[in-house]
Amino acid sequence: MVLKVAPNQLTLELEPGIAERFGSLREAVATGVYQRGLKRCAIDLDMAPSNLSVQLSEDPSRHFSVDSLERYIEATGDKTPIEYLIARFYGPKQQTAELAEIRKQFALLQQAMKNAGVA
Image (cartoon, rainbow, N blue to C red):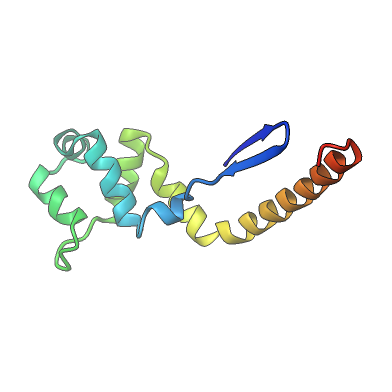
């Protein structure tokens, strides 16, 4: 989130969270793999690029294993899959608290602007 304050205007630019950017953990991993290069990641995971590609696809007969996920994170340093899981399964409670704090601070800002004769 980006907060910009002009003399008489407050602008909030909200970017979608990681849980909204990816539809699944598989999609988060696949995005990272293709950004880094399929061949390079396949070498890091000690598998053929075609096997990795099929595992990351929606093919129900081949799956990307938890062990492969762990090796991927270790080899690439890509924490996006972990961040996705946290946002998906832990995030809503934390986001609610953060939004409440933003609302509280915004109300204080509005009152301060009113007291200063700006609003």
